[in-house]
Image 1 (cartoon, rainbow, N blue to C red):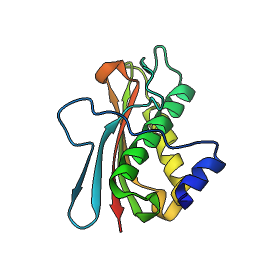
Image 2 (image 1 turned 60 degrees about the horizontal axis):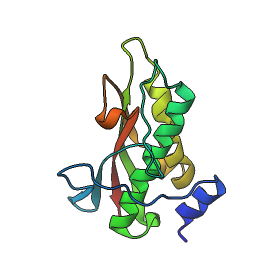
Image 3 (image 1 turned 90 degrees about the vertical axis):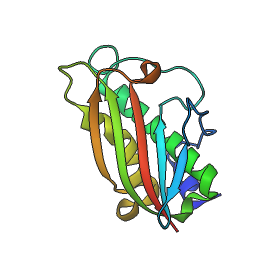
Length: 154
């Protein structure tokens, strides 16, 4: 078991099976020297449908947990591609899309669910990415949160 997965286990978390593709795209794409872009992943780690909108029927605390689920799925997709998450040298960039009402302004607090997970499992030096937290009117399948990420891998 990798050190990253051991840290997840300490947090009471496990990597899910990588989610199925939802369209005509590559779940992960390598480019340049050791850069891996992981396509957007939703919050469900067990295949169940998670729906709703922040500021309407989803709380900030639920959104935080959903962003964490998104990041677990991102890591599962990345692990399938590279074999071992201990090869990650840098969490470069994360974009978190938050389906929210026009008067909801806590997208960054929701996105913290995913980025704080990266910091806990990789450490602050490797696991602190640059980040955007973007409010959207809707996301595919009425998901409340979707996350994509870029990693540098050895």
